[in-house]
Length: 197
Image 1 (cartoon, rainbow, N blue to C red):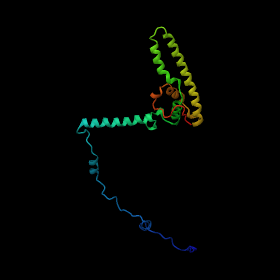
Image 2: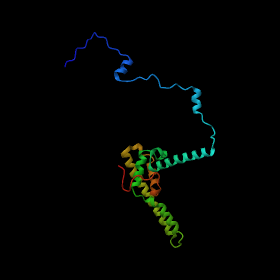
Image 3: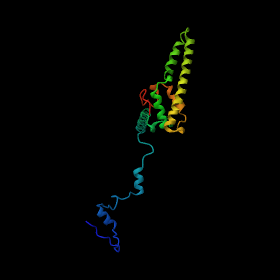
Image 4: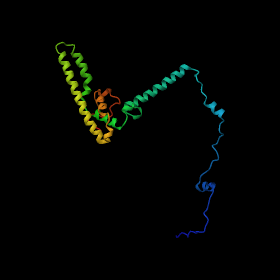
């Protein structure tokens, strides 16, 4: 069906806001439904005592509230949620470094058990010198492993995030690699050999 031609001499139809609302099926409420409270009433509603009536109860409630907040923050930090992490642990590069270190076996993870073993062995006079030399050899091996880890991780982060994003990753990765896996915070989010992509 053909449309009738538009009359160029016709006046544009102007409708009021009420007509527009009626045409669109909107209803227009004339107010918010209640009177604006006076300043005196509003201030009275917001008034709280400076010192609570029961100080022991207030202190107990404050302790319970702060304990709950700390528990949430501790769980969030252990899970690796950026909101709860310290500033030095935040960011995609740091998460990538953590996941890479956690996926890999690091020689430094054995540092604390080896040191404890050497302390026990130094009580035996015939092998105490050998135990100290073995500890130094293990320490040198752990440092070499951390240096190699730093170079590998820096190259991977530069390839993934850009050359300017690989700052201070070596030291961060080395410090994480020297910790026992169960003692790391944030907790490892990946399994062994599950390297980040």
